[in-house]
Length: 166
Image (spheres, rainbow, N blue to C red):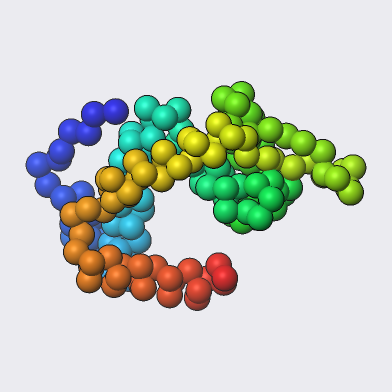
């Protein structure tokens, strides 16, 4: 996707209109909109970097989660809980990773109702390469100073904590 820059800042324009109509919470609206737009930009940068590896950020996250798990395998429900995504998203992600030979579905050894997603040796190699690729691009945040990164992370951690995310 090619992004064509606008001749103006659309969030600034939204702020101006929001203020003109006296809708209130202007700073919060502008910040929420800026965070949402930044998320879109970062996701595009990350997905573009991972595309040559046949991954998206969501597939990378699932592989990394399995890589970090003690056994290299987790129940599909636990994958969804840890990544905070809908079960359908987990199924779709694991389907794609399985089709690419990066994950196997295996029966749980003690619970016949549960299926595990298990990272394969190819999945282990791919997730390491993907992590190296993301480190090379700084997750798309190379333009931010260490101090700016720390402030942004701190503010977003506070927001997540207040929302009961953890």
